[in-house]
Amino acid sequence: MLTLERAREINQDMVTQENLILHSKNVSYAMGAMADHFGGDKEYWEAIGYLHDYDYEKYPEEHLQHTREPLLEAGASEEDVRAILSHGYGLCSDVKPETDMEKSLFTVDELTGIIQACARMRPKGIRDLNVKSFMKKFKDKRFAAKCNREVIRQGCEMLGMEVKDVAQICIDGMREHAEELGLTGTEE
Image (cartoon, rainbow, N blue to C red):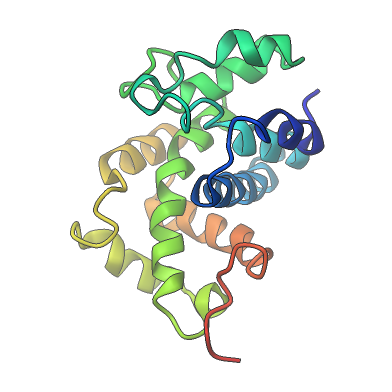
């Protein structure tokens, strides 16, 4: 089974831009929290989250088209690759999310971007970010405009959950790693 350490090793030569490494971490920690919620293997879900944008930096216009073979050669399983491919469902992949892990990855990929943007605006960062504040920003389409809210809603529907509930899980998961994610804010 894919470990977080192995996912980091695989990603290190392909994902080198700081913003993409940070995004990998955000998604990884949110996925760990989703694993806890669904009773999944936390480290495994975190590893999948960390590795999800494996080919994006080098092939942004062909995202997920350069993923399968290299990951299989690096020791990832078909299940790992399928989960990663499913996060681009309807956008750049025809692999439909079916498991709780796949549906979670599809959802939190975009969701973590809005959470990060919300936290960065607050003096205490993510440390005191609550879901009510998040939902205000979520409803403002101009805020973190590149984050696809329709994908988030679609993912939450697949999970049978409300956006606010998934957001709370992800906020809690990311909060545990606030310092590493640069989300502690400016106020002590």
